[in-house]
Length: 80
Image (tube, rainbow, N blue to C red):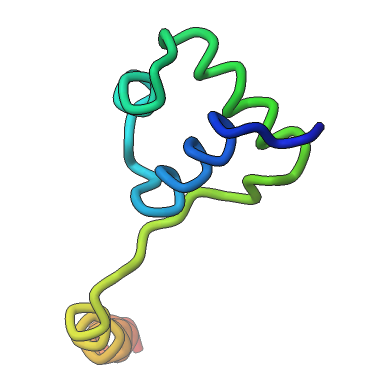
């Protein structure tokens, strides 16, 4: 599959915000929802889109990583 202008626009939008709905993407690239959904599915099938991820805030994530082992340790200690 060769990428045209609309495909590149869709990829750019998803790269900026993977949480956008198909309707939002369709509106931004000038398509109706069904053709937009089919294009996204084709981009996924052809390997242009590997996955959709959430980028976590490092500061918040660091607190979770610090507290989780403490919680697990305390939970396990109660069982022993």
